[in-house]
Image (cartoon, rainbow, N blue to C red; front, side):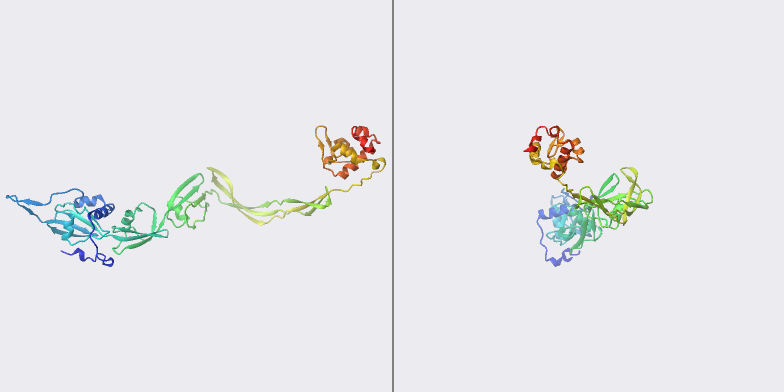
Length: 407
């Protein structure tokens, strides 16, 4: 009978000490998590229930312990143990198997066994998983990478691993690098698909999710881009071959104020010159409909905007118009009519400016536009012209305030 205590038993970590019953039972629960039920059924392992102790009664009533054969599986290596022991612990003692702190055994140590039963022992081993650059070490009793992932609760996760699920986890331990799944969104017109992926490129993500690209379909980001968490992959279905044509870019014209030019004057400084662009378009699917869509534009010639200078300088007016009007007190009349405010407006009566012109009297004196927007000098000059036009009949123009002209 081979001595299982001499199987190195990970001597690099020193002599193991036998755990108490509760520790072994805890490890056994972890062990059972990765052993299929059919394995137990096929091997008639006694779990959780006491069975006959294998005692033969002789006529006189004396009990004799009967030797029984138990199959012991330690880390996948089986041996038959012939023992008079009735419990799992006694079988381990007979086989000289000592349990380490992180080892697991099933059934539990105090389970009574029947001939032909199986006992399973798994050695604890360190399993380091570096997930997205963050290493974390676990004690497992798994024999393979896949079982180890199950034991640490990551068996159902989408992971890209540096090792295969079937690779063994040696007693000396194993380090495995893993990249977690990234959550990305695939947009294809009105269809939005959220997926978890470990693919290395956008193209692989689309392939993995059954997205077949047409000859002219456009994908953003580029197909060889590496997927990152939160990425949106936009697929534009292009139904026709893209066509490229040149189109005009209309130039604009900018107006600039010039305070050295009289108001109303304009001067072209720069003639506008249209530009040229190259436009590529095609028939695409948008909102479920076929529509013409501009795929890209390239400017071949930049447009040159035109520049026109517009005069803002108020024209100078000679306040003297000749005759009696030049000698009258126009300031007094303005104070009476508008409190001396050249922008005064009487909307109800339709009168404007210093002298409260009507639009008709303003125009008759040669004015244009709104009198309240003209300079005070122009308003005074137009008032004097109006006085001369009516031959000094100020009463008809300023019936209430006209007498102030003679103050």
